[in-house]
Length: 457
Ligand SMILES: [Zn+2]
Image (cartoon, rainbow, N blue to C red; front, top):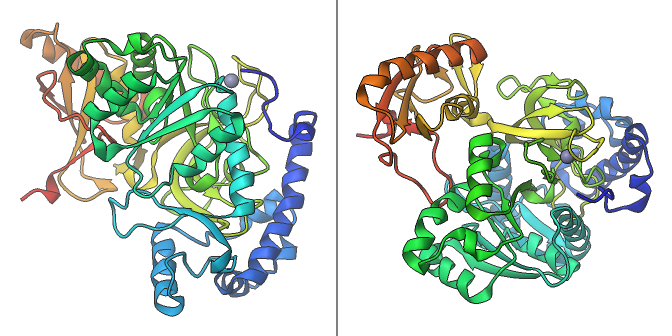
């Protein structure tokens, strides 16, 4: 990774403290703008008796309550549709005629929200940051980047915008086209990078020989870009993908054009590096996923749900938006690349969190430990829930695919070792059911972590 971690040259010369002051200056300006531009935000501030100009520091921001969760955003969108005839929400801060680009996520849960809504100034600002972030993975002029996501109407467009700033050619294929067609497009367009979910990248490893009669390693990719799932934060998955594709796998994310982060060029995974502190304050504002009480994010190892507050947006700035991503923060300098800012390791969604006998359990943490038993396990597993989360009456039930090389007689011992590891590391004693390798359905989008028996009839 090259050393200009930040897009803005002056940030590259600043200490972390100076970067925070820089953020705080932008913060007050953004909050005042939102207060004046939107009735929604005005009511939020007035409701707690605060004025935007009272919020001068990161500490002040952390003390504000959560203004929005996903359901509030959905409600705001319904209200604006009824009252103003557009779906962009009452929290929209720009005149609707000034909108330049909009996009949504897949809407698999509930009505889609247009969280990716930008003015021209927004998309130029966000796009340049997104592009810079991908340049840290080596993308530059002349690269061809195949994008394959099921994000309905163009949530990915903002990233394509960023790639164009780098002089790279984005090739955007809707995931609904199916993996056969995707592989044919890869064969035809000869990309240098592939961007998709880690689940899909794994699926293609098996599929490519059948469809193209070649392995994914023969694509000759310079890099694999994965997002949307915990994926390569798990060493097993990172190694498997890097070996199969014969290149570095990079983890990147930027929900709604905020929280921009990217992993670095290293065999070990050191988290998403917060390379755009001038875009939002998400890495510095965490809350407990259940109580929404503040968690001190300046402490190494802090775990909490990220709260997004944008610092330079016109159309749909997020202010104190608990978006649902739970992370573990590292504050020390990255051992691989020397990055001095914060790094975050995604450990799950707030609504995935389970409470087993008063202990918070993230399914990804369970998977991480189970994956460590490869090749005795394949890495595919499900947490079986008979009641809706988060509370689980113990024991927590796991369905785990054992590896091909394991005989039936070896399973009791394997079970004992996995249970001991889970108890030592995260204080749970699960009940394990082993299933044959390849029996848990693989998804091309996001592989589910739960088997929700309460939803089955
Ligand atoms: Zn690094």
